[in-house]
Length: 512
Figure 1 (cartoon, rainbow, N blue to C red):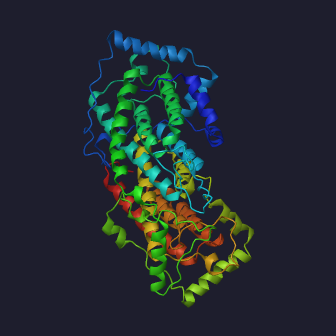
Figure 2 (figure 1 turned 90 degrees about the horizontal axis):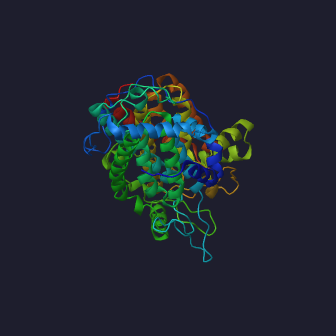
Figure 3 (figure 1 turned 90 degrees about the vertical axis):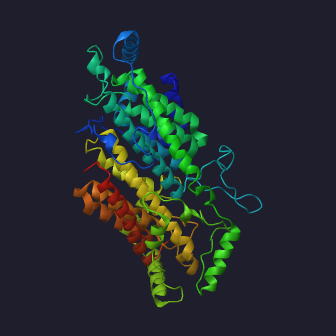
């Protein structure tokens, strides 16, 4: 386990980036589960073969000099709590999954900056083997971000299912139940303390953070130190609980790291030669191909992302849910839709502009998938869920969002449809022009998937989620960067993807 002095680690955190400072000010109530989900060790796993596939040794009994020393460590930690320590305790008491999801969104926003061209007009590519060189790795564009959210969330879920299996197996009481001199600084539960669920989540984040954000290891390590310090101060875990949970989280995460290294994302970038071949193939079909509007011409973003390994279904299913071909660029329907985009760009209402900007989620943001994570977080804090249920729901949401990205990018580079402003230079947009083909809309596909699984998780808000998805979808037409068919078909495809997440949720043993 990382043993870093808390005050120094927090200082590093505050200096890391302005987005971190701003988001860290958000206050949430302490996690107080209405039910502990103590039987979560039986829930269906994503990647692990069984909850005991990775061994966790039995803990020593809560007696004797070693356990007494661990109790004294908690007392010492609580005795030295100051304003900074109490703020840290309050921050992390909101929940491990919630806070690490926020942190990943912060990192995505920090890295969501496309690299500038080289002097010779070519474009550099971020290199995971040299992450601090320009351009820094990663460029956290929407598909990359959706993949990152999915890996972190799915690994945390599997790790916590395993953690809860061992909790029930060993049934070690929390220190605040064992020793009456320990203050409970977080809401008490009857959940066994070994291994620690918080430390399990932190262990996952260490291994996946190294993979996904290798240039931010010092920052992630400082956050882990703060997290574990807060958990020690809470009175909920002794040192051996934390050590066991952290080791379990790291071991589970390494299984997901192995999956990530073989999921074909490393070959997703493509090349100008591939792009030129797609242009020629589109012309051969009698259609106008998409052409980068950037100067110099930039290769399309992640041309092969549609071939990345999916989470909720196989490659044959991906083909079966593929959207139909868009209207031909020579058809009257295409001309009508193009004119509709022009009219929105020429005469937008104040409300349409507001909607376009609210859902833009462009450069420097945590992307459309991150936007839906933020929506989910704000709703779920009121549901009093257990840590493992938080992880399960985040995994369902983010596996759906990742598969939505794959399905959308599969369609984009199959059909290679031009953007409206390419076809009519009078069309201007205030929300940026993405550098990849138009059909289908990524925002629409993400939003259809997210609204579908969120409507299952929080059924009372289904109509609101679907209305939000429709607004996010039409925002791209208001922003003058998509045709109506891009939005409509993207939303339908996303809903189909979300349906697979709902089917998994119904069958995973967690119930509602």
